[in-house]
Image 1: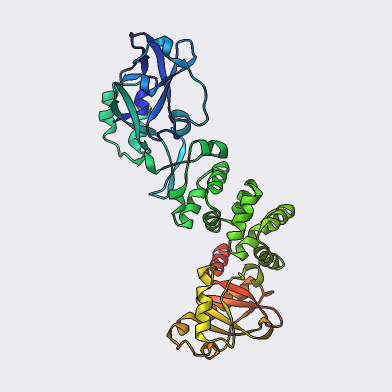
Image 2: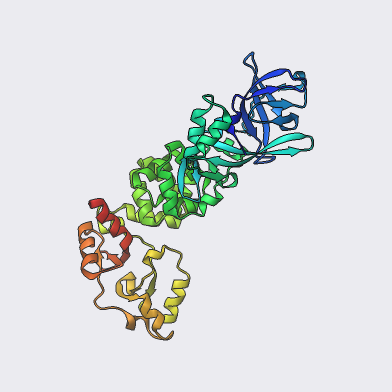
Length: 413
């Protein structure tokens, strides 16, 4: 094992023993091999930057490096945005530790030395984020490297294997060139992704959201404050923003659109699916802090004349959030609310039973124009998990769920 901090400023020599300069950085070519150091950048005595390819490295240690070629065969460095620079792009940068679900800073990079076909190659093993790496880096140049190693062995070390490292690259074009993927991140719980987002700068947040599929991005955004949601949506391409808003629950989509400038909201609604946009527009018409403003239109509704079998079929076809899947609502003529059936009752009833026979009495509901305080009081009084919202004529408009009420209570505190 050898560390980048031990190699930085390392003297480099040609095959004839001629001094070339000092090692300034190393590059990885993700399109060829994501772990092998492909090039070594050397600062010459004349301050120019030269590039030694991995095939030209004869030997490498903490004392010096030597090439297989003379000075005249070492070429000048040509910048390439498709190359990942260890010093510039990794060291001191924030990365996402997927296993521990947090953002960490890289203090050093660990390499393995591998003799290969007559020359020496370095392979990246891990990003070092522990205290030992920070101390080792701080002490470089103050004492012999072997003594630094012995001393830093006294401190805790923490590494993230290179294949699990999630780099954050704000530039979309360069992100593609570097083949940065957030597949592992996307498998985390949305709440964990939200916590990671809150630790990042705005540009890093934008890079992360743009790289996630719109469904995962929508779930993660739903877990962060509405103002932050709006700031992020306003900073990414409108097409991507519209896809994300379309996948958010209608009530949350309406909340975030209310935070955006009217012209931006209109643009996003125009890019959304017509049915989804229609639902969100309906919620935008309610005043803030009313039942209508916090309700969702996604719930399971069947006609009052349906059977248990019909209700089960409606459940199978439901694609909305699970938060509303504790009650099926019954409606009559003109979508008038006539009943509410707990899911548990449906599971125990014969398939041919009329669904209306299973309805609770009385059906508790709230007027969509009632204030949020009334909603909280009803949830508390009747120990509800969801509450249907209706208009003055008792037409079912949507459902307020317990998670929205909990958020109301927390924000009020």
